[in-house]
Amino acid sequence: MEKSPGRVRSLSAIVLLLRNVTVPALAFIGVSTVTAALLVATGTFTISEMGEFIQAGVAGVHSTAALFIFSVLFFGIMTDAGMFDRIINALMKKVGSNVVGVAMMTCIIAMIGHLDGGGASTFLITIPPMLPVYKRLNMRPTTLLLICVTAMGVMNLLPWGGPTMRSATVLGIEPNELWMKILPMQIVGVVIALATAFIWGNIEKKRGAGIAAAVSAGDAVLKTGAGASAFGKSAETEKNGETTEEDSEENAESKELARPGLFVFNAVLTLIVIVCLIFLDVPSYYIFLIGCAVALLVNYPGAKLQNKIIKSHSGPALMMASTILAAGVFLGVLEESEIMVHMANVLAAFIPHSMGRFLPLIIGVLSVPLTLLFCTDSYFFGLLPVLIGIGNEFGVDPAHTAIAMVVCRNCATFISPVVPATFLGTGLAGVEIKDHIKASFFWIWGVSLVCLIAGIVLGVLHF
Image (cartoon, rainbow, N blue to C red; front, side):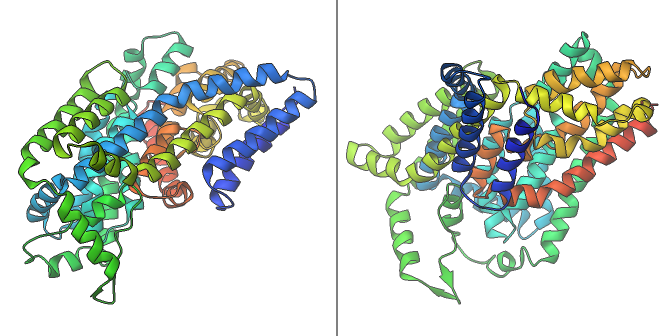
């Protein structure tokens, strides 16, 4: 099999996404189809085998697609019912126009939410309740995502986190043993995540965030139009201080769908759903499916009204679900055909033998850019064993290579377009994947490098 086409195909998908040439779903489908056609045309695989690869790839992400559909619907119902109105008003009374406080709160919620190691569930716990607050304070949703993914990257180092478990498997040791080595770097990472929230909160404040909220603090009621924007609806319908006709219609419809008398029920139901996400060993999409059924039956009885609610949220759900499924096709073709493994071998071949003993440092520095190209499995099960083999020739401790890869790569997990949960986060925040990557990439890379330096200073890594 040729090695270069796979590398070109993977890079092509990223270029298409970043340049906004087409929507993500079409980029993934187009690149994976061209790759599949070339592999069949060269006799590397048969059409039947490519079909199996695609099926395997979709099977790996279909639960995430289903999760997005039902989570969008559930939080959409809660928004329509006005549950977030009360929560947002309470938060606003506590923090007022304290932009830095909101940013710090976001980081803490994301850290707590990611204790279970689930990226999708953390996004679902953090973004829907915080996005309306960001909108009210005129804070950018890209900042919300940056703070969230920084906190998640640090917490993902826990022994039950996917990357740590994969690395421990390759090393042949217990995840806890590897985690104890990583722990000093993780503690530094937690401090950096909190610092990220503080710094970016101040950046938003300097941009003027919070001023409008302070001016309108005396308003009796705050509308929740921004809450709907988490699912793709526009919250910006006010122009030049005048309320538009569209705004009036949306306000009227919002009042019609609001269920203030059911606030306690909806809040308890949401809490139960979140608790079940964390503690129940059942598919997350099933939990949201049950939550949707209960929420619809209680808040909006009658088939006609239920159909209206479902259709109103179908657009964003369909868009992101199609993107996730298309990403599955892309990953299936690249993973199952072992293109990503060959990419790893090619990359390893570029490391000069004279630099062999500095392998952990080299791979640590390059981990964030590589995260955009390699999914979690191919990175740890494909690239890590190859690099450990190279390191053995120079007396490099395999654990040091693994630690550098785990810690530095984890920082960028949720900005990668080959990680399905990334699309869930960007979809919930109403941010395009290219904007998320552009806003977060260099900051996350810097966080990764600081963690790497901390590992060297603290003696976790040495050469």
